[in-house]
Length: 262
Length: 243
Image: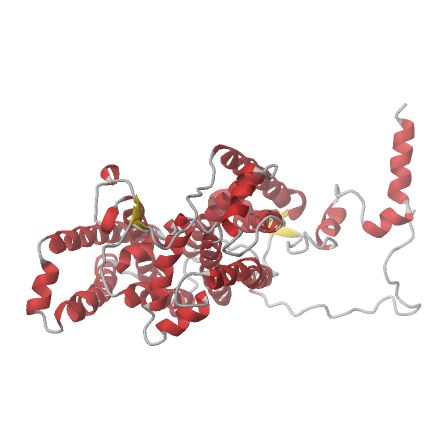
């Protein structure tokens, strides 16, 4: 029999209660919660966390023992590798840079996208489908459709851009477009394509699948994920010297020292 | 034979010092399991009970937790790397070379830091995908999604600032790409690039700034955001599940 620990009530006040917290019904405590719905964190959750941490520790050790982090020569400003590439997780932006104005691709588009992404819960305020993958079978179909739509379109646009530029598109634009090779090729056309194809995607899923707000949000988000991945893959494995487009298996080696001609 | 260790164990467990450390018995009863979680500073982020749904790996992929795990690994390996690394143009590269050739387990340490950093970008991305497709940003979790978006952004910034530090050709020219992008910011490009990189070209200032951001500024920011993120998960009722 151990003595009771912790602060003890004063004699005569044993029955006093303290207010510990206000609890909204939709947050911590669910009134209709049944006992068999829950599991004790110790041991059930902690075991999963422990095993996951162990497996990942072992995996990380194994990978680190097998593969060395890259290290090239000491940097020299006189010697530009061709192509110079950003880390892979930013190659999507670097890929985007090839198709429009630098500031637009590198700063404006990602900033606006981050703001839009943060705003998603304020646009789609319904509670439809919380805790269910893809919300509904319809949501799953929309995800697949949007993924295929965006992958194909992004990839085709990259190919089209490479094709047109190889056939004198820039020269043609500077001769005939109002605003020369800046206004239309670098601003108007890319902005129109980005907004136009997104709006078109929403219109299609609304017509084809009768999409709700949650569902067209799934379409837009899937479109972003697919585009982001396509741009990353193309930027990582299909761009060679001069950032020209190559098949992934035919990309020439990087020229480690490319002295710019003056 | 085993009576003596058993007695010692019993004595230890009932000793004044032990009881000041652990205020509950071995967690094999409901009561002690609850106490184990909410009297422990490391575990108290957890509730005492979770819905069974929240334990399902096909549902969460464990990706949020693994992102945090990699953040801890990066903090640990990063701190160890700081013992060997000086963020100056004279020393940065040779310190990395020393790590690879002279320091015992230095190469392994650097590799772990590098691969964990790449891993964290991937896990945070997968975590975000899981949260989106399961509709876990919906009320009352709207603001936590915003915090998560910021964490995604800062994870990439952390990785990117670390990329410059070896001061080799790979890192230098990769960060040059980012520098050119920063300069192309509409209206405030040059000023923005000047503040971020400490000059109009990548030099000692840029290296020092990236180092300070990488080891102090960004980890602190991310640490605060993680605390808010976890706290709000608790307050909003834990991992989502079907209503």
